[in-house]
Length: 628
Image 1 (cartoon, rainbow, N blue to C red):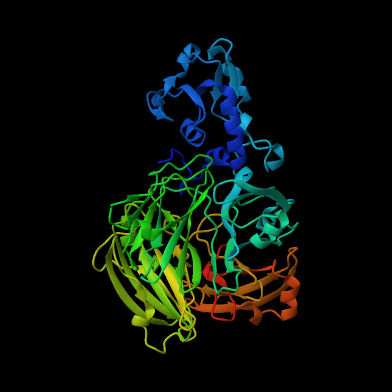
Image 2: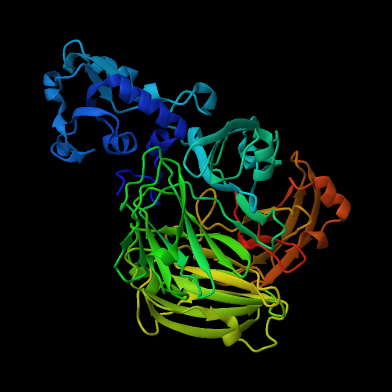
């Protein structure tokens, strides 16, 4: 396990981790380590472990602390010693494991070995031009970063779409720093772009980048750092993968989540006629040792080690069948990632088509919550996991619950199905599913043949009629298949409490301020290359709420100009399929261009959505939307 702390739901993201792991900072750390020689580390903030994990090049004599309660505890492989012993260290250099540490360095002089040079981590700072807050280095806005699965190999291209959503929080001049790595982890290109001055759209197409820098084929990852931001410290984006060889492949995924995790789950085993490739992409400047990660069939507790070293920032396509031959859908796997990677993508190859999706963070900090079983009646149905049922005349919809916490041993679940007008059509108890279950429910098996011909939605809900436990982190994989073309898309997400004035802990969630979060701000990218943009919006309600939504579609141009607005409503517990061409004229969509976007706004309720594009020939993409 890599000795780093990244993210937890109580404290949020660990800024010190991002400051040490940033690719540019990692280069500076390596230079600092080479120049320091044998070094004693003073560790006032408890980051010696992550520091030495991410930069093992330091030749460490010992780690020293002020905190008497920390004495003897391991930090970066060294038992912490009292700072009063520092003067006896046989070193010519002392490193203070802290940023903005000049005043601390001055105070340390009397306790350092005679003549020793005192260094701080300020020697590994990012350049001033990359900082948003120049007065305090460990500020979250200084590290608004993310990784992107980026490929352009003659068969597939990738396309990142986002917007300057920071302008809505007061940011004036946002810039993007990019570094593109090939599959071996070598840097192919590095550049900066300016974001639109207002809330305009921003697109990076691998085809364009390849021509811009004269690159050959590549399959690797892009590191992106937004500078001058406000409000949000994560780069959110939608990522399309599309065929460039006249093939039929088309898919989209959500952003990479930015934080390495101990485990990830929701990786489907292949069907007998499929290959499932997991893209393992190293997020750090140190190699992933052979055997440091493993795959396991969910619930089997028999992990199989990934038996090769993966170079810094390298990408490795791992064929699941090489590790679990004969294992097929509906079995699912977990990745024991050891905090080496951010949320990985996987690729499913079937019948000449390839689709890309992502797995999710399997939480290690989450325990069963008895309060969920005894929620106050005012919370209604409590936690809901909504997902679309696409029009059944064209599509099959399949749902597979996925354990998403290490402690989770069972999933007591019910399926509720709703028509677009909010009418409940069906309740079906799914059972108290064990961690190692094999349920993948095709809604064709539970719905009447003519039901939801034009689409609707369903919700997974906790149901304790046979006992079981719950933690609120209910997840599932949703698979959608075109009955004619065979094209498929899949997505996964987790549950929340939706649209009730009463609260339970931090639910219903809110993007800003205290819960409940009863408003909507969702990003819908526009179509590209002749493909049409669409989304499915769901109005889930745990308890009684407004009978109809008051939803607006705001069409923005590439420069952030609001070009048009369309309004409509969705019934409570209902849904709507939105094609942009049905709400905006062709002239307005041309004016918005492929870099424009639609912002979905509603101040009366919290909507949940899935988005994609349709190529009009049986190909489509589909994944959950993001908000800001």
